[in-house]
Image (cartoon, rainbow, N blue to C red; front, side, top):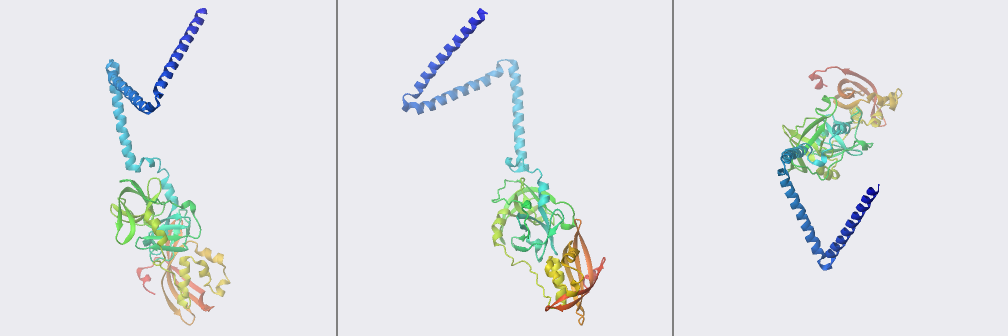
Length: 420
């Protein structure tokens, strides 16, 4: 026990001596470093460089000499060298993969759930003459291609859950092929963000989405993938276009072009085999304040004649301006219905197309009409065809709907559409 105690005391003395010696050397070194003060900056630089070079040389010498100290070190060096080369090339492959599939390493964790997000937020745009896709760029503003709603004063916006609405306002620019539909209510959860300014890497992967073939193809949206090619300008428009190698399908016009993280960089415009153009998000943002309704078709009706009243009635149904259509019902007709019951008859009507009218009996103010309706039933578009007569009556200086004798025509031949 005494021996052990003696060893501990001796060890403590040695440690204390070394600490004192280290402290003396440290103070001497600091004093040498600080004084004279005007040499202190130079000493800091030179000492730092000296020790860095000294450490580097020792490390290099150690690395060079270590493999030759014994055979086991030599074989270990070969193994570690092979692993290092393998890891280096693996890193290069990963970097190349990220560049080709994400555009930038910062987008590596993006993309999960992108299709589900787009499927919920992209809407169908259905008119009487064309169909396409669209998406919300603000709480109550849906963007689409102008050619989708051209000559259509009351397109319908169909949501992913199957419900649909009619916009309360439309503006656009036919030269840049952009239209903005304003909705009565707000839908903040469906908004997709526009990238501005649009910054894309060379050959960055992009995704175009929309409802391919319109209502002819039921189900979810179609996703088309491709790569950014270049920015283009048109002499006919101030808009900047994004060129890609994506194959756009009819019905996808007006849908979004997005990068991996879901930001909209453009809107689907037109495509040929292996080449498609998209109006850039920057041009869209710049153009929105300048869009007008000058090129938008307006609803003009005149119920001052029996034929005009019948056309006005179905035009209001087409535009889903239900209150105005209800006001064209005569007092006698209103005895057997009310606004709620009457509007419930037409909840699934997307569009009404008046094929033709003629006076059937001028003395009784009876009008013969042929028309068709497009109905949205269980996620599918159905076409129905009708013909018959409406007897009208003059009330409050306009003709109103009095009695009807309308029947449905099943599978009409081509001549039915031309004979009135």
